[in-house]
Length: 162
Image (cartoon, rainbow, N blue to C red; front, side, top):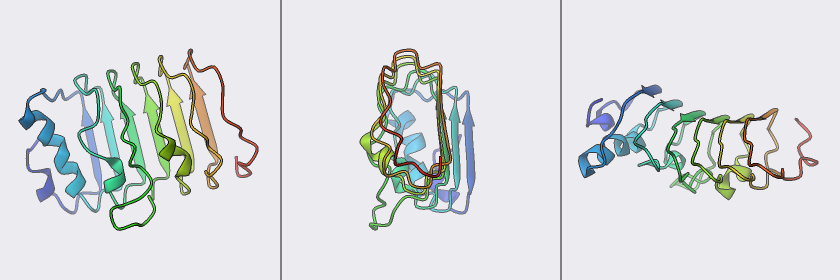
């Protein structure tokens, strides 16, 4: 994976599979260049075992519509999902979080993704609850599977498009 991701400024789809970034500053900087990909619409990160937190904020990708994370040791999810640096709202339509065994919670900003149509959470063994989903006015599909420690769900009454 190139260290100069920002040079791929017109890239629309990025899939990173089974790539283990080291814990050095250079390793973390490798993926921080993702924030410069202003045309990126789809980002899929799978089987990257060394991530405990994302070294970038998905909220800084102005055209991101699909985010899929399958990161076993992910512990922290960035809070900045809703508002872009220029003040505009996120365009995220699909959010899939699977096999993030150590992730305990999602940030409250997930519940403010007004353009989100699909939210899928699978096999997140430590996740105990979800933030409020009341503002997800576009949500059409909610899938929660094999999250054994999840003890309660937020109210879904206001989600008329579900």
